[in-house]
Structures are given as structure tokens and as C-alpha cells.
Length: 271
Image (cartoon, rainbow, N blue to C red; front, side, top):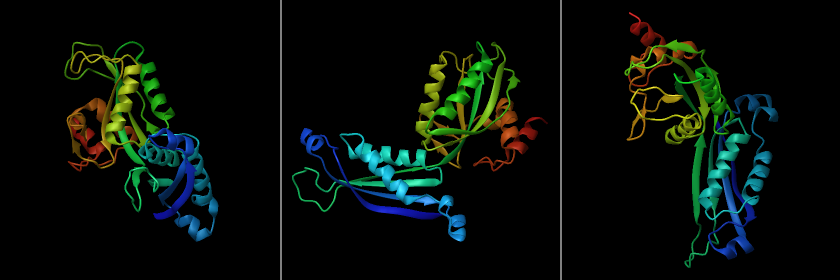
């Protein structure tokens, strides 16, 4: 990986909390630092195999000038996300937005914010045991793939499975999905909740019947435990309905805590 940088792009725009800032505008200075694999481009001296920084500069200019926002935080975030959406060769983008003429009443060398977005790989388990189960799984995969911030890399087949935990309910169909995302784990959790809610998900009985259930199993090699999200999913190595479809799409993937492969975990579960 290498870095392609555009430092201090001077762009006149109309961002700010005060009405005069939106009306009169002021200069902003945008710096972009992109992590790119340009080894092949460098060895072959071939522009098409890297990221064209002239195109990035034009994109940044458009992104900064086509809307007016109160916060430069919003400018930075939308610009970083936009670069990731529009330039698939960028693995990570850091964006700095400087506003040296900000009306703060004190002379300052610079006032700026920075944000960063990068591509992550996550694995999800999806399941349904109410209504048109296949249609709900189809909708989940389609929604993930059609979201600008997530793309489906691989999806398993659908597996008929018996209910886990609360057993007095219909059988499920389950699948596993590998996605690429520029979202954080919490943002991804929020995104899958939106998809579940769109499909009529109701949380009434723990492990109970549901139109659609989406669990985040793994997110890169992250290990985290918060009030709302635990990664890796604490139950994934105990559940056949998780490991069987995962074994189809990622058998050699290692669990970041146990360091056991999906294939070995699935085989141990079957003994």
C-alpha cells in the first residue's frame, strides 16, 4: 500500500452556522490522504491501475461546493464517504477540512477537523421463520448490496434449520453473508436494524420467531464488547445454523479469539 495525497485544495464554499457565512462564503482548504495499492500501476507506469488524483480533486471540489452545511464535520464526513463510494481503489481515506477564516473572535493559525473511512470485511448471519422466509432473506441480501456503504461479496445458500433456544416455533432458514463496508461496527448494527425493521421485525420473545434476524458475527479481526454489540458474536461457535452456511463461504476463516477455523469449529460441532 502507498499514500496518494492532495494537500490544501483551496475551495470557496458556503458552510457555516451563521447566515452570513452561507450567504458570503469563505475559503476552505481540503486535504485528502488515500491509502492505495499502486504497486502494479507503478511497475507498469499505467494510470488506469491506480487512482487518478485529478479526478479526486474534481470530485472533492464538487462535493464541497454542491451543498451548504452548518458544520465542517459534515463536510469532512460526506467527502470521505464520497471518495470511498466513487473510487474503489481507495482502501482508506482521511479527509482534513480547514476553515482558517472561521468567525470565532480570536486569531488562529488554522481551524480544522479530520475524519477517516476505510474498507472493512464483515460476516453476517441472517435468518427467518415467519411468513415468506426466503423473500425476507432475499430482501436482506438485496438491501445490503444496494446500500452505498455496504456491498455483498459472497452469500451462502439457504439452510433449513431447527429453532435454537426457544424451540416452540417454526423452523428457520438461515444463510451467511460476507460484506465489504465502510461503516463502523455500531453503524453497521444500526444499518441492519433498519433492514430488520423494514421487514417487520418485532423483538418480543428472546430467541423467538422473527421475520428477519441479522447478526454481526465478525468484523475484520476486531474484538469488542459494548452494551449494544459484542464481536465476535458470543454464540457463533455453538450454533450449527451459523457455522454450516459460514463453512460454505469462509471455511478457513479464523475466529479472532479462539483462532479456530470455521471448518474445524463446524466439524467439532458435528462430532
